[in-house]
Every structure is written in C-alpha cells, then in structure tokens.
Image 1 (cartoon, rainbow, N blue to C red):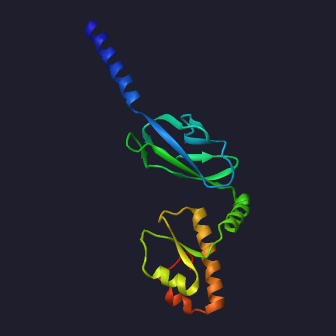
Image 2 (image 1 turned 180 degrees about the vertical axis):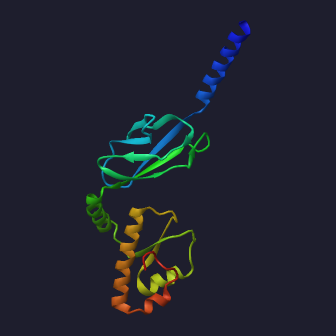
Image 3 (image 1 turned 90 degrees about the vertical axis):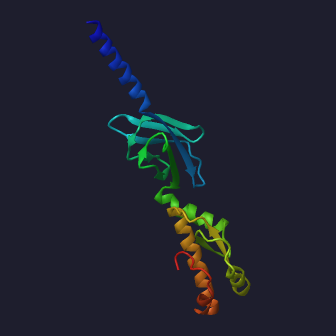
Length: 191
C-alpha cells in the first residue's frame, strides 16, 4: 500500500512539474505605424482554451501560455493589424510582434497626410544593397535621389513606396520622355 501511495505521489509531482515546464512566457510587442495612439486590443492564441488576453499600449505585454502551435490573431476597434509570430511557441521562439495599421476607411486619409508631410524628390528602394556608385550620378543629372530602406516591407510602406515612385516617374517622363529610364542605376519599387 505504501508503494502504491508513493507511486501515485511521484506521478502527481512529475505531472505538475511537466505542466509548469510547458508554460512559456510570451512577449507581445506593439509597433504602431499610425498617427493615432494605441490604447488597447485583444490578442487571441486559442479561443476555445480561453487563451485570449488584453493588450495595452503603455505596458509590457507578457503572458504565460502552453508551448505549441497557435494561429495568433489580434483585434482592435481602431486598427487593422499584421501579426509576426513564430510557427511554434517555445522557450527559444517566444516573441510576437503586432504591427498596427489604420482601418481601411482611415488608411487613405492617413496615407495622404503622411505623403504630404514626407514628400521628397527620392525614389524609395527596399533592398539589401549598400551604397551604389551611380546613385549620385542620377541625382546630379535629374535632381532626384534614392532613399534606401530595409528589404523587409509591410503593406503600408509598400503602398507609400509605389505611390511616391510612380509620382516621380511621371514627373521625369513629362520632362525627359523615356530616356531617363536608361540611366536608372536601380529599378524602384512599382515601376
């Protein structure tokens, strides 16, 4: 009887330690790419298991969840979002990044405001390349430069780059015809 009791006691202790080892501290980072202040939202790991948490913009967001594979979703009344997450959440891969964008109806207004504020005479190029020799030659000849951005691109930046690059391309075509295209050292996004 003592052996049986000891056996069940050991099983319970190992089950409890295994269950606590399976819990992972997940950090959720919010990157707000809008002109609006982020207050709160909900991050959902598994609705059926009750793994839905409130996320605030003013605090560190860290949650304990079991390791595993999740289809992480983020909800907010004010923002659309894009969730960057690992395939499986475990001790090594335990960070989630939520990138906030304006809702569809607000996107056009915010985009036009940001383009008005940040308007420049530079093609926006998303690439891994470093400084290119012919960039300064093109700037001297056509008075339009190149703004080199990181190669990882989100939908909002993609739209901004395409709009800016097409606008500059139209200006160059009106002034120089199609001859300026032969002098391009890089092909800007959207052309």
